Image 1 (cartoon, rainbow, N blue to C red):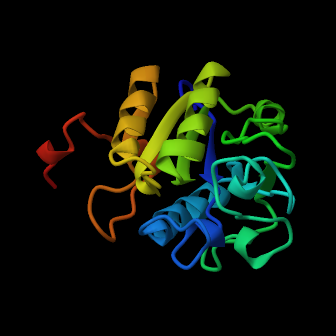
Image 2: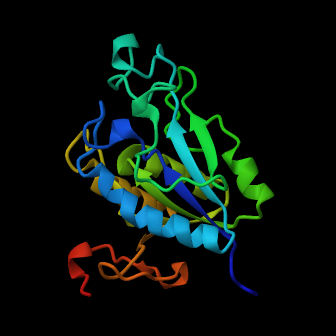
Amino acid sequence: MPGVKKQALLVVDVQNDFCPGGTLAVAHGDEVVEPLNRLIDEFLARGAPVFKTRDWHPPTTKHFAKFGGTWPVHCVQNTKGAQFHPQLKDDPRIHIISKGLGDTDCYSGFDETDLDDQLRQNGVEEVLVGGLTTDYCVKNTVLDALKNGYRVKALEDAIRAVDLQPGDGDRAIEEMRAAGAEVVASKSTPNCRLPISDCRLLPANKDSLSD
């Protein structure tokens, strides 16, 4: 249709180690699964591309605190912790993007990957981004997508923050918005399935929302 931008869905790092019970668990991290599954189904049904990014760290990397980095050991290649959440939709049509294969942090899905090339090969102009975590991998993926010229919608009901420092998640949302991303809800009311075109823009003051 004229004027409709081709979209892709980017599902960022919804892995066991970032969900409750994992080595770097995000509070309520598993709550992103339901809205993302709904969007995965919708995108695949209309033939739109879906990408899942994953941390895919080697056992020894400077990303981990024990080797000089910031974080506890997490998402080590070929371990249970690196697997996607068991309830997250799987489908052979979904593209898997592995990042963090060496010593660099690679918070963004674009860092040292071919994600940008794959998006361009698919003619994508706009990306919807959800997953974990708001203040690191989601934020950096959103910012890099904007830098690469894509329109970006960050899915506020499908992201959660690690909040290493209190308020990091809220600050990340404001940083994404200030950089040009739209911060939207994938649905307006519980159990209400909306097409992507009906995602609504969230105002800066979330307390002003009313359903």
